[in-house]
Image (tube, rainbow, N blue to C red; front, side, top):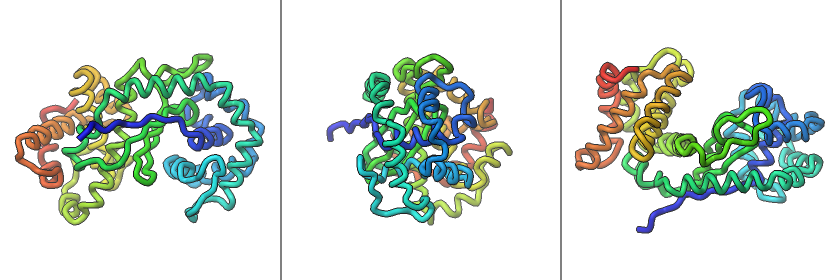
Length: 326
């Protein structure tokens, strides 16, 4: 079978929702002085903070709606008409019409046109990096054959410091920023830090796929979820549900293992240290060790599927944690 390729695109619906975020309170809560393009967008749309497209988004953010929900909704709209066939109940009334009005009123097409070289540069640089990554083969031992098309949308607007993963039809879409750049600097080149792009994309695909995998095997997972995972209080507070805990551990561990195998061991170690610093996660080296062990057993036909191995995961992680804790 021919090697499947990840697709890299620029999507105007994502750019539109990013520009709506730029007029909300989001920028002030994320990074005080982001890179030049994001900051310019904020200035250009500042006078539209009371536009119904923006106030609708702000209400959702104030209610705790995740960015994933907002961007999923945007990607389900048609372009350029922004028609919605199935409107979720949480969506503000006539929001798609307000978004279309916002696009026209802010003259976003001109704003994007003026920065087109930056957007195209982001797409080309990302494509150059991700063309070398075979996430399909890497993820198959854990979640089975990945039937969805993997898509990456490089984003030089908001959010500037975090990625977003959404499932749209037959696609798994990761929306990701470059490394942080501040002030008058342009967005950081996407191809200057391949490990960052690999981590950004793979972490979103791994989360989406593992969440689906756990749901598909809910009956087998239920008794396993009775065994607590050896995680710290900070991580448990952020992810109180066993399924969310496991999915996050798997996503982070998968990224570290991929970096170790496909980039360089020092990149994997740097990633593990960063997650320890950000999330207080000292068990991640153990997670990587356990996933590495499973991959070896899978290659030697000891386990046909990950669900067959999963009952051993909590116990093996406890042992690995005592050996590999930071």
